[in-house]
Length: 259
Image (tube, rainbow, N blue to C red):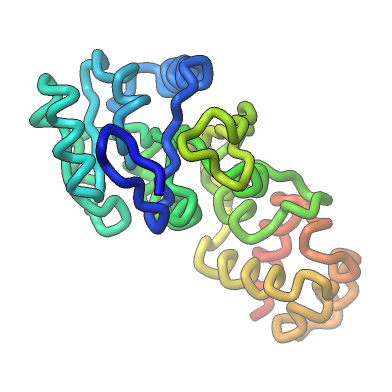
């Protein structure tokens, strides 16, 4: 197994660390451009490659699950002693980190990347911006548009509350050890105005539709089609990935009204 400064990398925790200064600079500059002075919480800093760029920020904290890396970070960045927190981000109460809204940034462990996104969505009033690196396939899915094969459940549930943008690719060679997959950096920014839809019903409908994505909506959502006027809607002849976010929101409002 690969080592970094005498610490074994834990592949079960998705530990592949960036070593490319150009890529790190790209990520750092993207963070400054997109977070615009918000406090920063870096999730999963590991060996601290990105932390070296962020350490001068006025309001900056790091949360790391692996105790070995917490010890390393405190030795590497002694001025950040009080800002380095050992915790499981997925289990933590995000309001404990700052007493104001903040941005979540980092080179996220790929094995929990979708869970991180849903954690942020659940805390959308606390986290107006998320910028980080994911497996490229996941980042592309989150930022996808209707009509593409990547457009799915996580796309729609994220874009209901956040505007998403894919920023750039990160090659395998930028890591130690190199992962088997390509990586990509993306940003999520909280929408200024929420869509007029019941998010609970919308989530239920979207999951039902996309869990049977090869079927038309007429088949996957048949339990909701109880009205002749609704039954006549042309949208039911489409598969879910062929319908835009606005279209799915409109459909959810119609179905909830008649159920």
